[in-house]
Length: 237
Image (tube, rainbow, N blue to C red; front, side, top):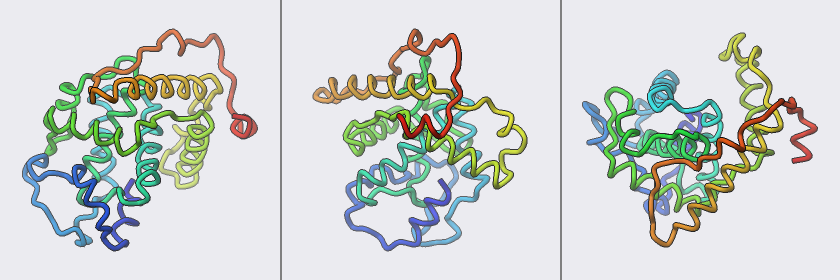
């Protein structure tokens, strides 16, 4: 996420990005913070700041680990879908990351929180009202053209890439190496639930209704055994 921010700040301002200014972090959402110039290098968040922001929300909202990869997929999909007009920047990264975390939670978590509960899951010094969360959620869905389905192959590629990066950098430590490998059933189930969530949202698009719960597919997530996922499986998906 921080790499995206650094890269975006090196690019000239795109006037077309104004249509996505709803994602700009509002000063009233950041308690005790002062707005800084877009081009100020000092406004680039540190690695620890981004990590703490994500970790606080992740634990308070009781999100599942699969949501971590899905939120990154949605962020990068937003960049691609908008032709680069919407990118993580110093002035929008909190709202953008928060809204993608909520979306990933609702798509995957069986017991995802309501939006009013997400408003209570903000890190210290940051506050998102219920109205603001509803607006951000709808804005993300519109920017994605309601295409929230995550193919098993795409999830697997992100999984292996991130795992490899953590191991090579040493940031993950022994815990990453000791993690259970991704299995075929989990990857395919994620594709199924994200597809059904997409169909549900498209069906309700006309009414612009923002649901606060995920698609409950507990029965589809139960598996008697796991088949370890290798690169050959990714190619076949």
